[in-house]
Length: 432
Image (cartoon, rainbow, N blue to C red):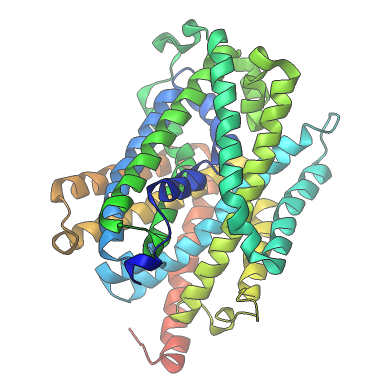
């Protein structure tokens, strides 16, 4: 692609990163973070942000060298070749996006329920979860262009609403609620940060836009670092406002919609409603965009032979309809069968694993991408240690989440092994 055909500048690239991160995860995991870290919730978000920022270095270097819409899957293939490892990680990435869609759908249902009189029934929750996935599925099947056109506007609306909450609530901050005496132990704070890590994973979407970025050598690093740093600041401010303006007991009671409760001291019921609407917009648009992206990821993987050939088909409007149906169907199954805490843990663990492998890939390619080996080694160690800490803690508190996460890994490996050795070598003549 020639430079004159590139259309995305620094602001646009940063918007992609911010939009990917502030897509709905913060609304879903904030209450979980408060219940684990208490007054140190802001510190938990900082810990997770450091992991994201170190990994952003690897993504920036890789994206400049390998400017492809394939993003993560291209980086892994370049570092390890097309083999069982890279194929399994690519399948795992596709599955991980199904988890994020499920996370956003459950968060959408939690905030949508607040518009109905309590007590909230299970059937209402599952109905709202299903609506949150089915409507974006229909939009993706009918008009894919609407997804990309609407995202910029929705990102601006989400950020403005969050800034209004932060600014108006600043006058109601009670610093005593942030006292270190009210913090949990260091391990619990770290674990909280790793559980909410899924709220940061969206920065990697910048890599998928690398082909369209103007002056990629300058723009891509600025976009990765700028978007992650801005979101770290935004999340820390939100965490401070949440934990210092509302008694923790109220936040724990309203765990699934904690941010809406945090807006009440400054703005009353109007603030609660504003945040609830912002959460609905954020989660709905995130589901919309993630179905769009994951369907095309599935199409790309099918084209290269990692997923079944049936998924490598588009209709006359260039929409991979089968991929959209499969993405939405599996997300419906996950969202309606796993609770919010488990989804957050599985999502965070999945992306920590993928980012750990990407950091290792960047280190292997350090000479080609001109990366600093010490930063890349640090990023690899930190992301690996974060994943290990999350898994060890979760094993003792929520073993079912660990079983599901391991099942995802096993499915990825078994699918890639069986499909690669039995099917792909006959269709694509690419045996391992």
